Image (cartoon, rainbow, N blue to C red):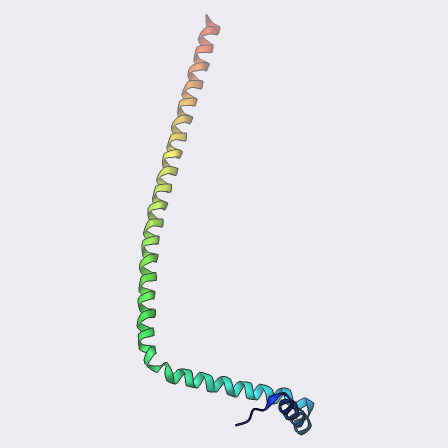
Length: 119
């Protein structure tokens, strides 16, 4: 068998240009590329028919693992949310009590000032 080589390839390209014209060459190239792509996909699907069942099982197991991780994260988030809500409630209660204490102290001060003024 002989190889084409660079001079032979140039001759083929010139003949294609003369035969099909400069407007048709890009369309012809796209058609050849599309045909090769379809052929490659067809051969790949024939060889991977046996692997599809195993791959589907692996994908399902990975999905189940992801769901389990999400459930764990969700439970942890719920626990964290409850903890934060509890802290907020405690802080609000503390602020309410402090406000009441300040009001009582203010009332006592004003009462003491009134007594001092009377005396």
